[in-house]
Length: 198
Image (cartoon, rainbow, N blue to C red; front, side):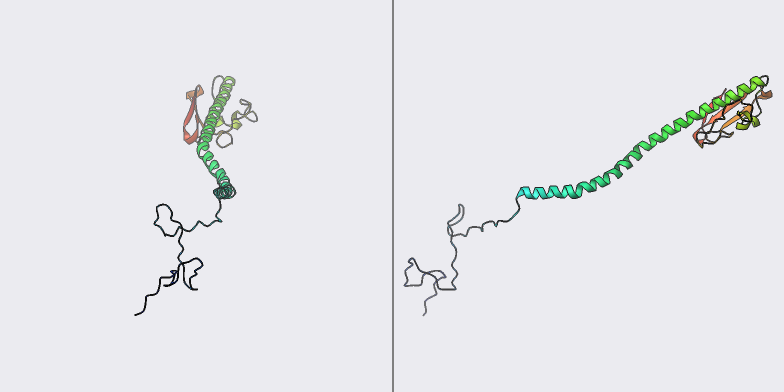
């Protein structure tokens, strides 16, 4: 009967485990470290952390660089479009409302100017107002119409001269019986009545 082989790293029988004993080549020696608190004696310690990683401040610096070089330019590129869109969305209705009010005010003033021309005509014609066909730039204006108006008013909505009709910036003139009275109506956006004279 043969004796069993000694465990690796153990001194063979008959040899003293004296200093200087070396295990035969090829034997693997278990590494035994001083026990760590909470571990049994002879347990291997965890391997030491390997160095070479970036410190936290370097990682933070890299992230800040990426934000400055990539994210900020993209935001700066997109922001004007958002700002312009926001301005147009919020300010455009206010501007349009102010333009509408200015056009309405101009249309009222221009109808009153035509009324002055009609009154001047009546003074020169024994209190009789002109026929509707004469209430035009040519019929009452300074050039051909006897100068009852120094300048014929323009339509604030289309820029042309005011004409008779019910569209924005136009007017209707109706001469009363025997020409002794009249009705003058001015129209605004969507044919809304802005003013009725006298």
